[in-house]
Image 1 (cartoon, rainbow, N blue to C red):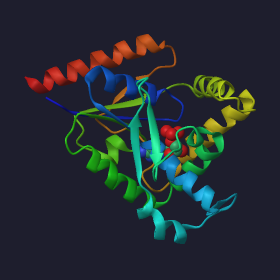
Image 2 (image 1 turned 180 degrees about the vertical axis):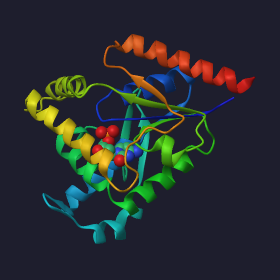
Image 3 (image 1 turned 30 degrees about the vertical axis):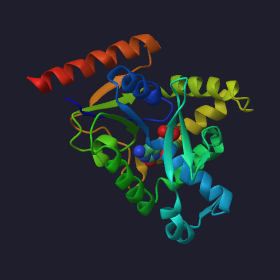
Length: 230
Ligand code: DC
């Protein structure tokens, strides 16, 4: 029996690591919805439709249907994001694109378009999808919903290490401010603000190692599938 697993939570809380790991464990497809918002943001940046204080919604609305966003598995088990045939995986992971993604994700028609595409990807179940609104909006009937959280300082430290490893010049304080700013925007926007679904399991991984976190998640998944098969 295949189910839909919805993993939501704050930025840089290890959601995608968890979702990717669980998809590999279960033999399911992994969908990173944040990457889809990031791909839209990159497209807008390149077109000049997003500036410091403005997003050209008219242009974006007229052209959003032309954006083909899909995922391609890498031999190392990872996944690349493909935008209109171009591998943009590395380009969408910068702080700038993350900030632009946070802004375009507040626009109603952008959300409706991407939600529609995400729902189509889950039609056959057997999917682990991570994002902000998966358990609340995209798949309100998902069989298993996890809401991931970790302390802002812990998340900022993880993000800071990731950015340093990629060679980005930044400071821990800057990353922590950015984490707080994005938390605020993600939880306060009018369109599908980030919130825990009532039937989601709260998963705080501040004090867990990656191994502990995966073991715990696999136990939760096995139990959910077992209970549904009874
Ligand atoms: O998870 P991430 O950092 O890659 O997400 C990038 C931005 O997209 C983030 O600011 C929140 C937004 N997002 C969203 O609004 N809904 C989703 N389902 C996924 C991401």
